[in-house]
Image 1 (cartoon, rainbow, N blue to C red):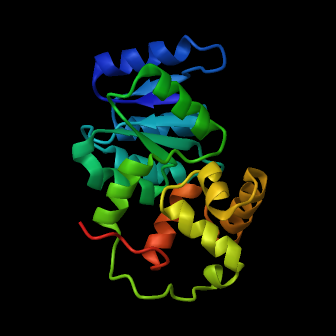
Image 2: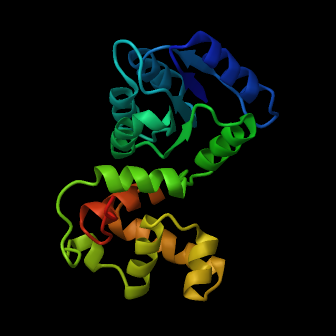
Length: 217
């Protein structure tokens, strides 16, 4: 993976934590977005850990370019609570999740493994705040029948709604009274049908088309 941050001490700390693990390796670092895009194209990492506020090209622009490449890496965005708007835009740009900069080392390592495994990293509390604050447009009483939503079965639409509310597969299974394996099957099917890569992008789509309403502040 590559690590992108313009603060040398943080960058060195992240690298040390990651390289201490047998199954993880940092193949390069960058201090700005432009360098990150070049490095990602050359090194072809599985994961990019991306800061947002950096000199020159910021992490938002870099995320858009990195995720637009063929067979792109997963992008894990680093942020703080006061950067919620930036994080939401990063998710729109194709990031697979985000982590607070003050997270424990074990949380960082767990997040990397989740992202590398093809899953999205959704913290229900923080992600809920982002979506409620920055979901665009006025949500209608019923979701518009976009072709990708029309292709969903009623159960798949129900699962998508619960994903957008921040529930995990286990929580969805408990809510619906089915097995976790069944939920995983529904999730995989609906992601394919609506043409998104992961749960983060599915959540954004669900809010954008009005399938789920932002709760009032």
